[in-house]
Image 1 (tube, helix red, strand yellow):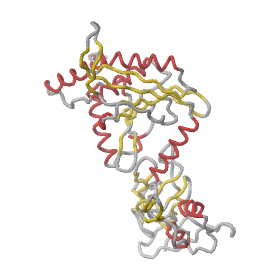
Image 2: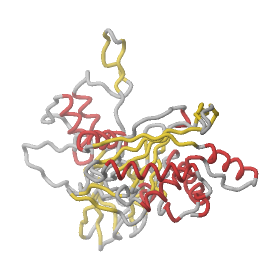
Image 3: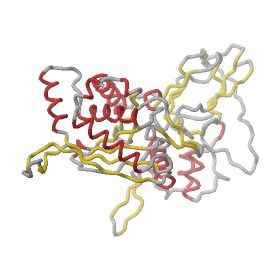
Image 4: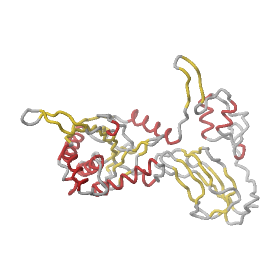
Length: 386
């Protein structure tokens, strides 16, 4: 039997934007002892999958949020019995705290689904821990309710398949909606002659420099140096105030199978282009494998998004709040350009689009930033020595 004082294990804040998270896997079972600092539960946040470690020594007495269930920030997900011994086979049943009779006990996911489907939770028998109503209970009470990959109807558009959003996808959708609806945004576009940058990369390849910087690595390095000169863009809008950040941390947008993650290259203005190249490769690999930790995904001050590998000439990226700006890079293409003598020459050209929060950045500042960025990319030797 478990003995000792009961301590609540609550859903911790594992990212700045987190409102809820999903329990993927419990690493201990009721009745098992867990030491302080020992892995207790694997949780999926809006940004990454994180292993949460126990903060005290004790015996896992009760699991309140089961695997694949979600809970809000600060909600009780388990209880530990501390200052006492425990049995690995016969845990004492700990009654869950009673809620008012007018409010059914249900997980956040079940409540949200019930609201979407117009289903009353009262009267639904909960199959979760402590009798909590879980998502499956709500769906079971509504046989016609669509599930992931289920046919929702047949009409003029054919069979319709509903795909439930993962916690990461849902958070991205909410943040991007908030960005578009709350930020007074303006965009500027500029064309950059990348001929010398392409030549520099070819020279570095011949010199067998490793890691070989990509054109995007050169862009990140140039953006970081320009941000050092134009701190108005290395800023954010936080709690109604403009905040300028002391470090230049450039986020790089990485598309995964089911989400868009933005790992951070910290102090990019102080890193060489080769250090940026090494960091970017590691971060991209970790992001695509969904192994990026919270430390890899936080505290960005500016973001670079590149769709050039898909042949996209130009696009407008959505600002990632609280950041004040994001740079979108298109493909480096061979184009006919008018030379100084009036003739046409073939040059490698890239279009860059800068989106800015007008509460933080003014048009002239953004234009000057883009001019400096273009100058650095068109004279790329500065990126090796600056």
